[in-house]
Image (cartoon, rainbow, N blue to C red; front, side, top):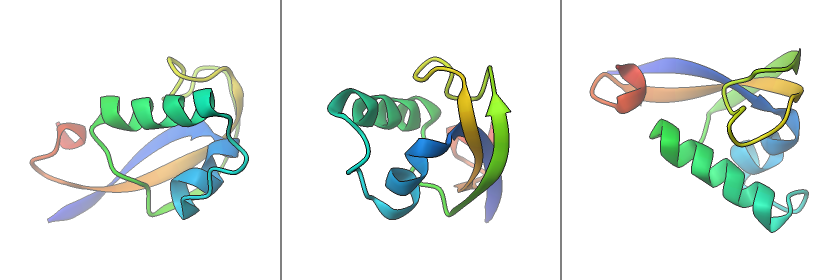
Amino acid sequence: MLRPYRLTAPSHWAAYLINGDDSNLDPQEKHAVNSWLAQEGLGYPVSCEDAGFIRRHDASNFALASDCQEYVFLVSASSRAAA
């Protein structure tokens, strides 16, 4: 069974996270996004919506305070994110 799991992260990551379009990211930012996903044990999100400016978002170890999205991931009960 899958359930939604929500995390906030920078809005400028949305094109890459939702559509796989990394044209607006430099190599360090792309690495930061991928490292964040790996740390969280997640694949790519299925949707996102505006969350406004957030100083300490869920990806703060990988990006500065910024305008953010709330990204929705689908996770199984056995995934790390579900714990």
